[in-house]
Image (cartoon, rainbow, N blue to C red; front, side, top):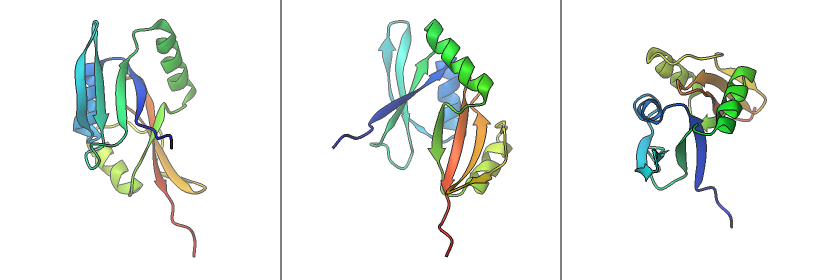
Length: 133
């Protein structure tokens, strides 16, 4: 069986990203070690620290800068994170100054909201909707 163990997101500043992803979103730093002029830097969800790691990848390559800017300017999220209560999370993050592009919106089987991560990305929150009885 193949499992997802690691995924990455391009960030324009690793220090700023680590602060946002841990202090605002609530992830926990898992790994950090030097790799040339940058760092291998990953975070995980607080309630599953042995789960999937998210690498905060520096956008040091001109292609990654173009890709990241293209997604952002087109309004396309770089990734999505699941939540149990999107309205509660939306209010919590807004109170911390997070800039949202839209309020929670039903989109078929999910309710979604998109915000800016301060590091050059749009992130989508998604809550699985309960099936109608």
